Length: 392
Image 1: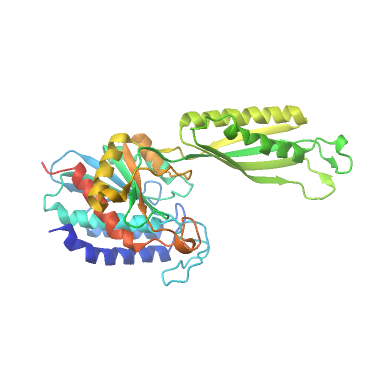
Image 2: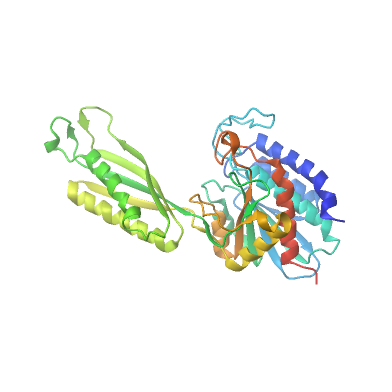
């Protein structure tokens, strides 16, 4: 049996699954229907199925031959809290919930790969164990971290782990495979400025939290422009500033929040130290109290060199040498596949979803996963398994 013989029918059936999942999106840790679909399809293939990691997580295990090699392939399942503005038949049926990042496609492609690899197992095409990891709560809630904490790699030993994400703006048929940092680490800053409220016509009697907060916003920008190595990417954005409720009152308190994006643990620490120093300086300069906390979010997603080189070769085999990009810049977006890559070497790749016409970009209410990617994703996963676990 050849994969080419399986793909046409598999493409149609997998696309139908993808559209069904798209029409029934579920938010982080609530992916019960999606998990049921995944588990039932894996069980129908005869795979070992484990449920319960991070609540709705599903892991299916396929064994072939007697080889000791084991790898993990991961897909995310959750949707976003967003109202869909598409009008096609498979649009979301749940108000305020939408698959606007393509996790429906990632899940469907990995299910398709599991079916293809099951069919090819008896052909002696690979020798070893494949763990298909269907992860909840990628969109900011850290389902990957929780799966790791609850024993993903202890329950399912594997030498390496791999992820794939669709990428609008990259043409269909192309893949980006880059070593080192590919997605940023993301931290959330919270700042409370407390002063002495008063009458807006008598500012000398108050300690103005709005002026202090405005100075703080301006000063924080120097951490990137003047305190960061020019070749070390970093972003600091203050995205919230709440103070006051009346035009003639100087408020007692101002609250600020924002995000910090970096690519190394060292840079995360430098930004944290710098923010704290500026907060202390503003407090002294303006006679206010400044309380600062930084909530560490996802760490940077860092591909290991050897696994990335191998994935690049596999992608060239599947798509063609001229279709594999190693020159794209990392994204300042974040991805909790990072937690899996901290524990095991591996590679996270981007598969082109098209040029994003009509606003069809990630996290857009007009987004839809491009079903033409499905056979490409399946072929990539199958080729990767065969490359990593050749028959003895």
